[in-house]
Length: 132
Image (tube, rainbow, N blue to C red; front, side, top):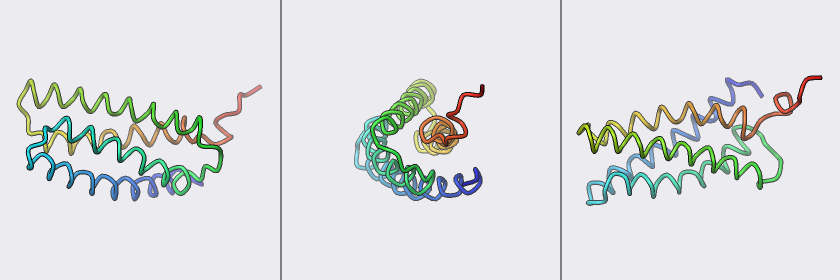
């Protein structure tokens, strides 16, 4: 499957998941939950939800879940750390709007996570082979 088709599928999964997640983020923060706690709760749910769709539908990966899920969690853990760090710096230290910062982070992390999924997590055989 071509990169363009995979990216479109990834975008569909991501847009649906993140649209719902962002609305829930706004609702939770309006109800008094702190931005970092709201992001943390929703991030974990989103990782589990998108793994299933991205593994099968986006990247057509049919292998076992074990190592692939571990890599997926590592990549998303890295994304979580970056997201939290940006909220701490831009919202807590510099006073930017958490709604805008989180919206920008969703888009930025999406690109990074697509590349990690394409070339590391769900890598195709053509990228696993070591040239001789």
